[in-house]
Structures are given as structure tokens and as C-alpha cells.
Image (cartoon, rainbow, N blue to C red; front, side, top):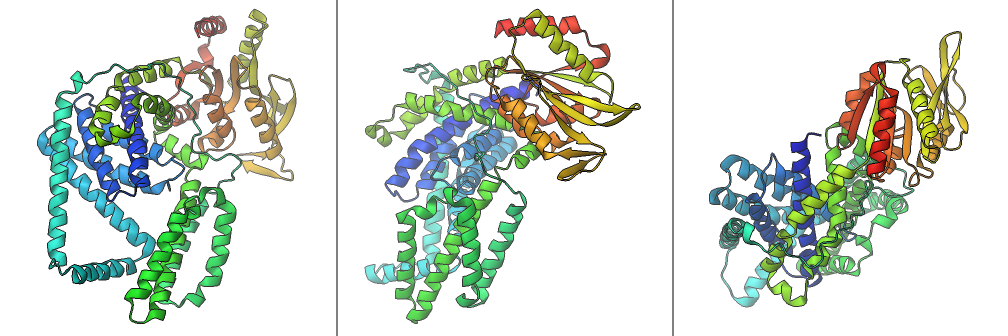
Length: 563
């Protein structure tokens, strides 16, 4: 990752962490009090925050990156179904970034961004409600509106109500632009003094992943197909045709994703469903039909919430993470870990009191004042992160031989140095490579990894058959004592790791230890792919054909003594 690109992602992490923290504080407050239009209020303050930061920092797609980070952080809240807040915040970030790109930094751009973001909030809410309850909810709300007009004797046609709502959102959007513009112009005058500037960043790279959960990426498509088919069936066929297969499917969802389906355990969620059934029965002339309509809406709501939660869980699959890495988003995961780790510090320094909720602009300015110290801390953290030396060369060019020399020299120079991980030994016969066995460097134990001969419970990759037991041995060797090592060796990283398999999960765990340097062995033809996949890492490539053993050992010793 280039310095400029790294700097943009770090700034995005600062903005994203502050944005998410503000949403956590006020989102929890608004929703706990059941304040109407809570999402619209959060959007209003989010646009002000982004406008303010646009006067402080610039960079290519900075606010889009900040939106991605804030959305992912917001979705980590236990009360959230990941896709809801993710989509809402992402839409705001996209609209703001487009406006800035097209019209630069001025009141016109801010106004357009604010107005569009306001409308996106209500459209997102309407679409979400219709998706969950179906178009029958529109009929219910429409009839309730007419009941309200009849009861109050008001004369306000729906067209007039629509115009009023549109006008109100335009005004609020324009107001967010004016306020944000004013705060932005005075952003350098914002007090940056804080009560406690001590930051202890507990950065984790696997914040999304669920321990001991077996992911299946194909389930994402499977759940989407079931959802579409079920919603279609609900509209066309009577309930009795779907109730049994749906019950079986729901049993499967609860068995696989039960711990993640928190929303279904909330009494308020079920209370809403009961109220909807009662209102449907009340509004429909045919009470039986109204009851059936209400029951279908309940089934639909439970199904949609469950399916989207299931998809959210499957999206945490390390394979998805690997795919994003390959597309150039390894920086996202690196900075997301930083942003998430900064939240306790931000919340601590905001010190929100009950009276502060009456003046959210004060909290907004106070949170912006934390940005410089956060950026400095993030930058220092990245500079100190683990160093990864890549020994690269052609096949059978002596990469592993050079690696063995490094390990031997380091141990001879400093017997106390703790080196762990795996080293692969080729199994040759008559100058033909018949397979590999891997050695646990820390214990000296060995285990066969692959062979050219097919054996039971082996999988074919290229011309070799690999044993799952060998992978388990290797992963254990990499992960055991990982926090006590001075140097971790992984020989080698290949196509499997690029697909999120092999040693991929162990590599991710190793990268959580910022003090742990590593040596990887990578074939020359996939070197660029490996470096692109983990482009947030601090790499140094050692070409085996012109490698200098003494210089490397000296360089490693100097780095070790400086950490």
C-alpha cells in the first residue's frame, strides 16, 4: 500500500470511528426512547459531521471509505442486523462522495448531499418496511391515515401530505448543509484538549468472524432463493401449502444461526407483530381474511429478518474476506480493526451526560476534536506493525534452503530467540518430487502434507494429493505459542491461501500480533498476487537468487532490538 493510500485509509478510519461512535451514542438514545424519525435525525447529524471533516481532510473517495468503515462498525452492534445499518450509512456516504466529486466543496454540493441523504433515509425506511411486511402494510397505513382524518375531521389529502413531507425533508437537508458548512469553516478553532489522551488499541483482525462456526458461502445464494420463492408463494397460494416446508426451513435457520437471531427474542418485535394482526382484523371487512393477511405479514417479517441475519452471518466467511483482499480491500480490514479499537477511547472522552443529549452539536464538535490524536495514534500503530519478509524465487530455486540457513544463523547468534511456524521439506526420489512433509519448527515434529499418490481422505491440488490431517498439523504449528514467538515462519504460501484456504486463517490470527515478525516463502509467479491480497502488510521481498544471509540476520536483529 502506498503512503498516500495508507494515509487516506487511516483518515477514513478516524472519521468512520467517530461517525460510528456518534451513531452508537445517539442511535441507542433515540431508539430507547422510541423517538420518531430516529434514522432521519441520525442522517441529519451524519451529514453535518461529513461536511465538517471535508474542511479538515481531503483524499480520493475519503468519505466513501469512511462510510464503509462506519457502516461495518455500526453493524457490529449486538442489536443490529448487519445489512440494515450497513446499507443506510453506505447510501449516505455514496451520495455525499458523489456530490463532493461533482460540485467540489461548497454550499451547493453540501445542500445536494444533505437533501439527497435525507430522502435516502426515508426511502430506505419505507423499502425496509415493505420488504419485511409486504405491500399489505401500505394498505394498512393508508386506511389508518383515513381513519385519522375521519376522527379528527381534518382535510389533508395524501398528495398534500406528500408535498409537506418532501418540503420538510428539503428544508432539513438544506439546514444540515448550512450548519455543517459553518462548523467546517471553524473546524480549526475546535478545542482539541481532551481529558484522557491515553489510547490503548486492542486491534483485532477477526472482529466479524464467529468462533467455531463452519461457514458455507453457497448458503448465501440458497437463502436468497428460499426467500424469493417463499415470498412469491405467500402472495399466490394459501397458507397451508407453505406452512410445513417453511417450518422445516425455519427450524434449520434457528439450529444454524440461533445465537445471531437476537432480534426475534425481543418482546417489542413480537408486540409489533401482534398489533399488526389486530389492526388487520379491525380494518378488513372480512375478519377472517384480515386475520390471514395479518398472519402472512407475521410470517413474512420473521422470514425476512431471519434470512437477512443468516446472510449477514455467512458474509463473515473468511472466503469472502479473502475475495475482498484480492480485490484490493485488505486496507479496509486493517483500518477497520483500528477504528473499532478506538471506540472505547472516543466514548470515554465524550463523557455524555443526560443534559448533553439536548445539545448534540456540542458532542459533535467534541468528537471532531479527537480526530488529530486518533490519526497520530493510528499512524504510529501502523508504523510499528509486524514486518513480513518474503523469500521469493522460482520453483526449486533454493528458497527453503535459504530459509533453513536463516533459522540456523539466528539460533546460533542468539540461542534465546523463539522461532516457530512451519518449514516444508521436499520428498524426492530419483530427482523427482514425490511430495512434502512439514516440520513444526518450535517442536521439531514432522507430518506428511501431500504426495503424488492418491490416498484415502486426500484432496487433489495440482499434481499433489493433500491430507487434511497435514493441514491441521500445520495450522496448530503456526498458531501454538504465537504470542510468545520472536519470529514466525510459513513455508510456503500459495494458491490455497489466495482462495482463503490452507494457512489463510492461521495467517490472519498471526497478523493480530503486531509485535510478531514473519518470514513467508512465496513462489515468484504468485508474489504480486500474495502482496496484493495482504497489501495492508509491511512487506520486504528477498529474492533468493541474490540474497545475502549476513545482511538479513543483521537487519532482523536491529529491528528486533528497536521494538
